[in-house]
Amino acid sequence: MADSIEFEEVGFIKYFGEAVPRGVIDASSAGNALLGLDEALRFFNAQQTPDLSSVTYEIPVETRAGSWEAVLLAAGGIAGTFALSYAKKAGEKMAENDFKDVGLKTVLQKSMAAIKNLARLVKHTRKPKNWQIERIEPVSNIDMAVVHNSQGEPIYIPIEHMKWYQQLPPQLLVRLTAVVRKNRTLSIGVVAPTCPPEDVVIDEYDKTFFEQPEPEEIEDDTLFPELIHGIEAQLIGRLIRGNESSNTVGLEYEGHVINCVPAIGSVRQYKPALFLRCRVEGRITRHTKHRFVADKKPTLIVSRVIPLESDGQMGLFNS
Image (cartoon, rainbow, N blue to C red; front, side, top):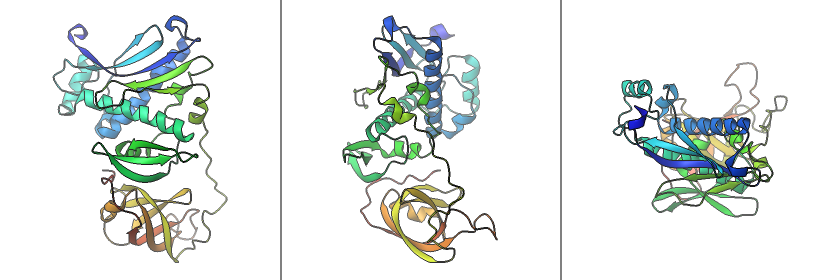
């Protein structure tokens, strides 16, 4: 029964300001905020435990007045199982799928931390994607990506979160930031001893950075026409992701990501070079989709990867 379950706070979203008198906002805004929080949490929960994407479960929150606040809760009374809902049916579904070893509180805290850090990153860089990682630095035994804004100011984001951000759905946080307006500010926080206590605050000016439209793909122009099918090429860029299932790795090169396939063996051989600036050598192909029609985007058949900076991070290949 719900009454017998104890809940712990793990994070929150809060709207405050003169446009939130006594914690009152319109129903449409409240609904958007809760739906946006739910969508973001489910995305990051699934990044940690992929099987959660196929499981039906509920995420309990409690709304509070004063400012308008939605507090994320972890049910502590279900003996360590990942039962996000106090509903018995959902708990049984989780048990059937063997989630007994997945810690509820930890997963939700990490998801809230990822949401908070994503908001920090967008606000700092003033763009919702295509962040350039300058280097990797260990901070308190955690590998952190260092990302600079246009003024050269750094921000530190866990490498684990940067990996998740590569898979972001378009405009993941827009439902949350859309509720922000003049005199109504959003605050995102995490309740965890290992997480910095400072909340990230999004105001009317900041929200525009989250709402930039997705750029349309240019279908009529060939990307990097100088990279002709069949030539040998040496490209300098940063390896930003690897996928063992498709045996590919992405090379961030001049503002685009070029798909790379090893000529021999598995992409795991490039694991030590992931997120490093490298010289990647190989043969260009533009016929991965059609034999007689050239691809708009080149693919590199890789023969050698040479790191141009030292290795300072964990491997982050997709499993």
